[in-house]
Length: 87
Image (cartoon, rainbow, N blue to C red; front, side):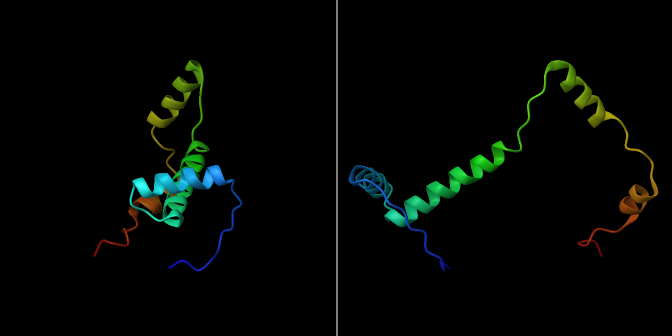
């Protein structure tokens, strides 16, 4: 359910372009704009989770992932607890 309003100002050219694209997909202007904006927003947020490493640091990162976890009481408790979906 849509319960908030988002107001935008656009040029005539921008509105015409958006309307043409929405029409090509059989969508309303609002649906097209919301879907496109949300898709782009998700992309921006996912890009923030990307990180790049040089070759040496990447090898160190892989080694850390491949190393066995430290044996701690907290980890033992976590691994011995039953999952919520298990009977």
